[in-house]
Image 1 (cartoon, one colour):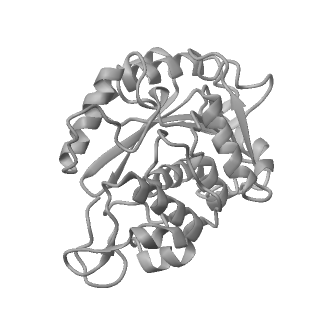
Image 2: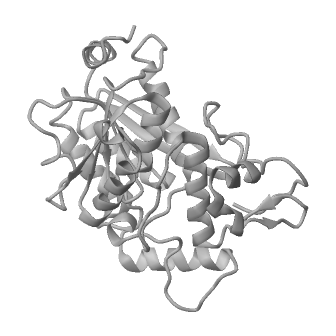
Length: 325
């Protein structure tokens, strides 16, 4: 993101956001600062007169996230420990809105709302962004899993700061680092969908080099290894990168097709898609989707797959959420 090019009004968001995305109209920094006073010291006048922040300053970006979550979703006490990944709220919200559209296809076009729609967030992280936004927007109930107990402790603190949220969002430790669903799903447990933002890089070195490149683009080359806006190793890299992670997810999902309506995962690089689609065909997924998303010039996407027919999914979802059409 850059600085504002407008003399007044909200900072324009990147085009392409979902029409239900609360951030599609841009950032109103005055309103955000009113909702979160901590943002005020980071505000600055942009070259063309509008208010903005320094998007190369991790502290400013984290505080902007806190303000966005407070102003748009009424979420209080959001924070992450030093060194953990700071997610872009508008992009994370977009994934959820597109998932809601996917679910609506199995419900006569009606977006499912309410706690009967259960969602598993694989790798909930210290920020718990998907359960927080997804519960506020659609009332869904969530299970968030993670291998990092410190990340889960951070997510738990956020839930504790918001009365009643712990009843809708459950956190589970994945005790087996190499597993994804195994050990997290309980016997007989069913979910309307799963979501995931997998680690992108294939090695720690690759992650460091990518971070340094980002810092150089932001004009902040320090000449030493840094991580752009944080990120613990499990958040940033795994063996085989995102394609390897998603292939492992697909392998485990094949035995759970009658317990999950849709499995989904973000795919950061289009170069990962051929391997992912090949793995899905080998797993004999009945329905495979690739859904494009955009934020300005940044193109993203998620892949979704189901081992159920459309008719079976409609029956499956009607059992989970009887209020659906």
